[in-house]
Image 1 (cartoon, chains in turn brown, cyan):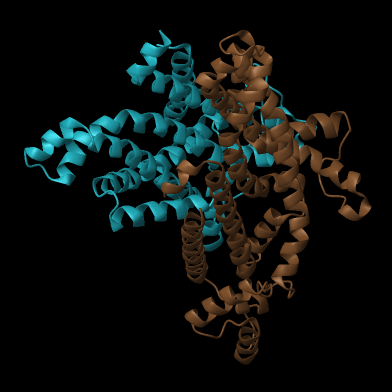
Image 2 (image 1 turned 180 degrees about the horizontal axis):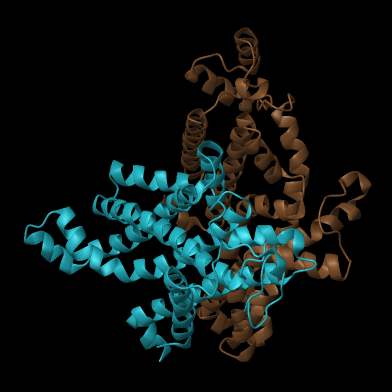
Length: 315
Length: 271
């Protein structure tokens, strides 16, 4: 197990290193000098040079790459060109919206998908199963930002149960904050729930065909008891993998949903940074998202190998 | 043939037909402004109503289908054109450094959600349909590489491949002549699914302003325009959304149906 973990850790490191080089290289070729963008066309040459030095733009490419990566390892993501505040501070502020939103959506999607998937598997081929499967087909086809607009139309504009957008902030109280994240979380959760329900159903159907399920029934358990005690538990393993993967998708997916609801999260930060050509912010946020995806996948792999020893020999 | 296949094919062809017809005919000029008729709900003259500039929504949806299909199709094309040869090469040289580099490279692309790639590309090169295609296309490469490699690996163990090797054919020729035709079905099914994901991705990118730029109509763009008017003109948001849903649903059903239809084992198992 240790050998496997070490091997995966090394490959994680390599992935992160390559990703950082790719991101840095892509941002490097971006046209336009941030210093002249900030100071305008009439700026004096010496003012420009001073600002470049202040922003750390005067070194060689290799120097700047290592100072960027080195800084990030120490928690220093650089200084925003436009706001002149540390990027790590901006990211930390925005994470308080994006992270709870992703977690909220993940919880909702699990709460919807588990019962739906189990119900469908238990009634395989019957009308209940077909209804659930039809609903999941639809759920996968619905773009989440469009669903978000419909939620706003129904629950914010017509029923007035929620605000149409904006975030009250956590300092107004936990429930107020949660309330303003509810519609975005539902919009984000729906397509994920549809996928998860399908995975849950097919995973459970695989298990239901196993010999130990027949044994469970033979020793006198009812269908329901066998399903819950032996079926659902075993079916959960692949489902947990998908949940792990979904978390990173939710983090990235919230970028668009934040636009619909005007939420001050990472997504809006990125879009504002793009239009202001504040590339250090774009660079660091993208790196952070990629880091999250790679790390979550790594942890899922590891958890999976801990549960199922057969996987350790595979690479 | 299953119901899925028929329904999926019908919905998909409807959308493709609308896109093709839009080249020669639309009820109105999709770009013609007609302010006096603005924000009409669906009626006999304007089947899908009009937008805030009085443009005919039905015509815009037809032309928008063109944008969606073009972006998704080219993106799938990029993914297949690069991913399939990579997957074939990785399988032919299983366990070699080439295989290792290809598969680790794929892992890396997977680590960038397509939206993040799109953001990176547009941050640098600017927003537009071409950059959206590239962003979605890059994400398709590992999908096709992985599925081709997986299927090809098991084929390499089969007797008919051994026979081809004994007869003196090289790895490249075997891959092209024997492996590729045998993974084609799988690629068609995956292509359909990636096509539908591409439609969704294009809509999302256009919605946040990173995709096709005005005046090119696109469904995502129409939804973005509709957002501030949804309270008094809900049809502006409903109609492009339904167009996306019909297209994606159609393609997904088509993919599912094709998978069952092309795989005789499933057909037997179901019967």
